[in-house]
Length: 173
Image (cartoon, rainbow, N blue to C red; front, top):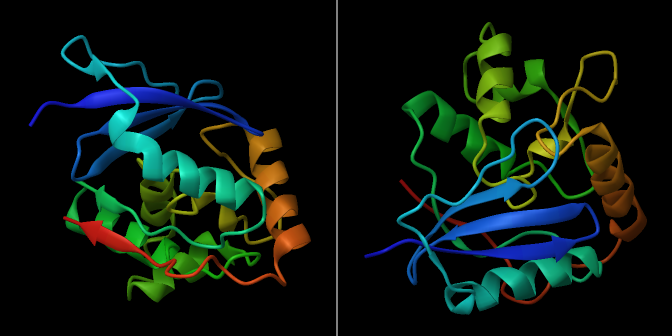
């Protein structure tokens, strides 16, 4: 199946979204330290991403606290474990890299947990922005620290609200 892509305009900037009719393969900021560009073989077609755009809109409107999208994580076993653990960090909460490593049973793998967090192919949807330094500091984020600050403040603002009906997570490995 061929890969399609489109762009989503959000309060934290433009996002590149890529995948096919069955699975999402990438969400990437178009500013910050991890900018991705469409590959030449990809087709510019927003049609497969209607549900992605709707869920992002709901999230930014404070109507959604988690996402129910089929994701192709495509990482190593360790990365996939970290990304799965990230999806379990509650909306409006934060976790340290140390706690994230401990959640997957690798308490000494703090730096590796940070590297896996930084390689997350689905920012916002797999909430890597909820990870902070052990001293409470906001540390690196592919979309930039201001975007991370915005996302955390946004979740604090809407934290008491319930998720949209049927919200949950689905991940494909």
